[in-house]
Image (cartoon, rainbow, N blue to C red; front, side, top):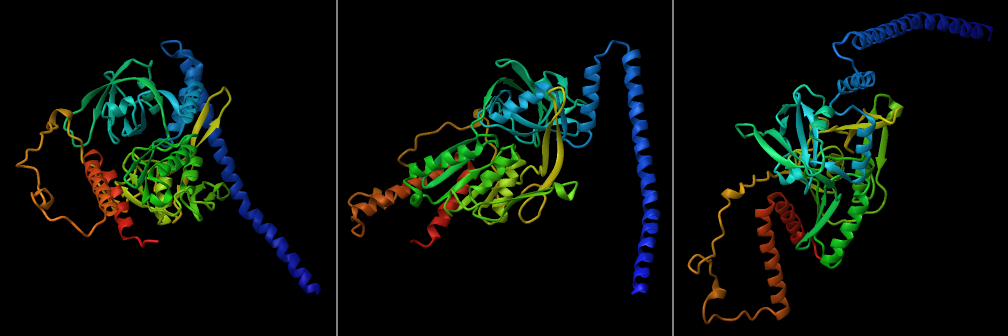
Length: 448
């Protein structure tokens, strides 16, 4: 017994010596790193004082410090930034769903401003700005070399005023100017429509109103169709939706899932990781869903598309999404400003990160470009010679004795829905494709 105690004591002493031997170099390294940081901060102080005292013109100390903070944050990634008090106020207003501007979500790439997506029914959307466009000049002034915040500030202005932006677009040989009149942007987070027996939910942004708007619009459209029994499926249209609040993306995903993981976020430290799971309850009551995405679908949109795709709850249709797979935390600071800091990456239920990769649709469907109005051919009335004829048009035909009047009416209603879907292809090919998928699934589904 004494030998055991002595061995244990010896082991403890050896452990203390070993720990001391390992810890000492680590402590020294940490002390050296801290010393280097303090030296760099001293260097910053020296430069700041020299600029204040010797620059050719008098400078505003507050603006100098803000510029230094902004430069530090924007050097990290395109989504981290400093929000001055006014910018912080503007961001909070935008999250509530109403603000002034052009109606575009932008990021920065290769020194220029890149359009993530234009927002529906905004001045930018009406002017024909597209996801993926690069803005190189604002009112003739180059944005090259400006921070994203500074470039956005150039685009701000009074409601009703004109702005001319120079746009570089893929597959267009030369840059071109676009004139836009600034306006108050009122975002309706969710709009709905019915196409035959299909309910289409257009989600434009993820702000405070998104989930409540989705629930309200879904119920309204289901009632218009005649109840859930009459609905053949839902289209959730996330095209050109730049994202927004993570909490709302989780709620929208949960609206169509009964169980399982929706999304996980992983930060720098293990304790910063979070996992969000769905609760029981599916607003669509198990009906098929098609999710529409494109290159303007980013962030929160990708969370929803990825969650429903991984759970095989929806068929994702369209083109590859934007690929923003990081989470930003807005941290209020002294002086009423804030910083937007990238604090985590998010992962879909299968564990995939879409950062810089995007969500790949199950079915890739490109949207044909709309021809300019000047190139749209005028509609010509169809002549009797050109109109396609059928047996029903012939004189003295035999009647169809296999159908009752009710069955004939049902057939005519189905024909009208088919013709409506055909018209939709000219208006919005991707949406028409989604509706056709749901009609096809409904046709082969077992009848109750």
